Amino acid sequence: MKRVLLCVLFAQGILAPVCILAATNDLFPVSVDGRWGYVSRSGSLVINPQFDRAEVFSEGLAAVRIGKWGYVNPAGKIAINPQFDYADVFSDGLAAVRLGGGVPKPFSGIGGGGRYGYVKPDGNYVINPQFDDAGKFAEGLAPVKLGGRWGYIGKTGNFVINPQFDEAAGFYGGLAVIKSGGRFGYTDPAGKLVINPQFERAQRFSEGLAGIRMDGRWGFVGKNGQITINPQFEDVGWFVKGLAPARQAKRWGYVDPKGNFVINPQFDDAEPFSEGLAAVRDSGRWGFVDTSGKFAINPQFDEAAPFTDGLARVKSSGKYGYVDRSGKYVWNPSK
Image (cartoon, helix red, strand yellow):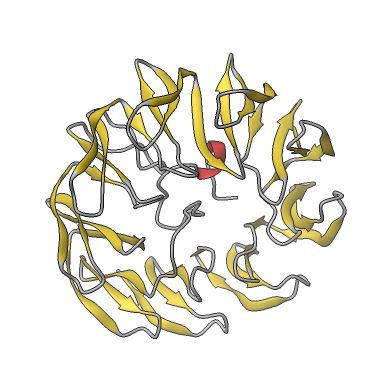
């Protein structure tokens, strides 16, 4: 799976799985001759390529870079002037931004020094820059790092859970992954450790289950802390509509909540389902399968992201484009 520790908990790489709660999106970022703009779901250019970089729309705004980072609205107008050294997507009505510092850490989109705060859609700070690191708001709380420790703040910027963890992820389904004493567990919004740190790795909860690793093997745990699927897999992803990717004997398939393979291990790599299709890699090429395991889009891409709002971003011959659920390009690959 193309994921990093804590299931890609913060901002994502171009083709990484996205854990963002966002409204339906009708615009998609594209690059033309080194400049970024946006196309519609039908592939029509809506916002002309003019930015150094452009990220996905979320809650009606998208982060764009013109020297510095700011935000643009769906009409292509600058909604928040470029002024930040980093700008995350809006989530739960707020966006983490950074002043100062260097290049964000690969894939996570965060880190690199400087100070993090949060802005509202009008561009005004609701929480002034003061944190060493910061994640997205979800379920009313956001993980932030201060003085080398992670805790959680509410939307006023006050700590709800004091900084005490080695690492901390966003809340999903009422629980959040934390790392303490070199082990991973889960906290509730009040800071109570619902599942004590005991795992080598841990993912967010999805459909009541979360992937955990013990003694080098992955299984699943329920919200009561009971192991529901014994650790037996080499790797796993999260459940979507009753199916989760799992690797056995170096091959990926999909299991049900009882741990039984519904789609037999046969792929080089596999991602969780999204909008009824899942990206899988076969013989070095990525395609998409349906819930029966049959290819809906034959393997042909160098990379493939999950479907979002009817389109999936793919890479072919070093260029990125978008395909619909039939595999037809709505935006041909371009740099």
